Amino acid sequence: MEQPQASLPQGKTAGSKKGYPEPLVILPSTNHTHSIILLHGRGSNATRFGLELLKAKTSTGPTLQELFPGAKFIFPTAKKRRSTALKRIPINQWFDNYSLEDPAQRLDLQYDGLRETSAFVHALIRAEAKAVGLRNVILGGLSQGCAMSLHISLNYDPSEVERASDEGGPPSLGGYIGMSGWLPFAENISSAAVPAKEDGQDADDTDPFGSADCPDDDEGVDDSVQARQLRAANFARDIVDLDPLDKDEQPVPSFASVPYLLGHGTADEKVSVRLGEQARDVLLQLGLDVTWRAYQEFGHWYKEPDEIDDIVQFLREKVGMTPARSE
Image (cartoon, rainbow, N blue to C red; front, side):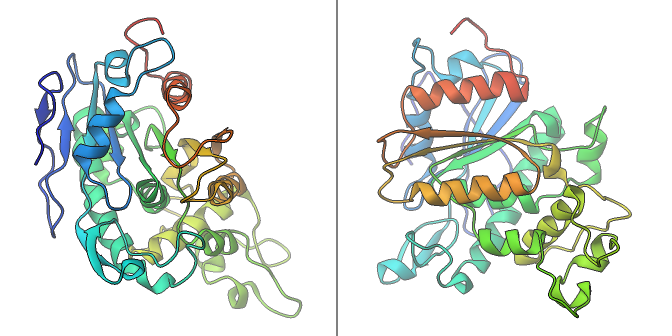
């Protein structure tokens, strides 16, 4: 594997499994305060994506690594999977998907990768939560890495260890950063969160997660934000074969208090900005704290320095990370 520059100290994190290569880890240069886990796009890898991102500069010059020296950057690499869209050529991808114009096509292809990668990234999150606390772990990604990590943010549930490590409130990730991506199963998650009730039908007939996971109101379906969040979480968890959350033990999913940053170029030729907008709208439907940034006439990637500036502002204002020096 290509070696990172000498100025970027390497380390190791949770071991790879089931074909996932060892993540690229850039260690902090000062006391370790935060961990940032970022997933690359389809066909790329940790080294190609991670080292280039860390070279990207803000409008005033410093890089993310220079501004946040206490941050540990973790860049996983996807295992090789045969791509249905590319005549079954094996490529690095978090999950297989048939069409980027309409990711809802051939949803059956996505289940295995979403399930396997969720388990892999969950392990990375847990390892970092033990070190710095779950509230100091930030998740995100670019393109398909954004799609994968966005789904993980909805299906993730903290372990008892992580709950114990986060005092002062419900345990949750510290933040989410998504670039030029989409939300897998967006329409399905939206429909599960706000089920349509037809005349003459009970809530149980229209909402598979309704009466089991949230109380019914007088009309049969609880449309509170909390109920929407729980239904969405359980639908996302069902996709990756995780047990549903119990409303009595955990009435509010972990993602409810996570701030989200989503950025997208309006001229993105690979992942249409409308897919980013759809992801934004689903998160807003769930009552989440979403910061949306559209970069005019920009294509498929992160826009430098504008998007790097927005990430710094998000980390400072929403996550609570303090830059080491003035921007």
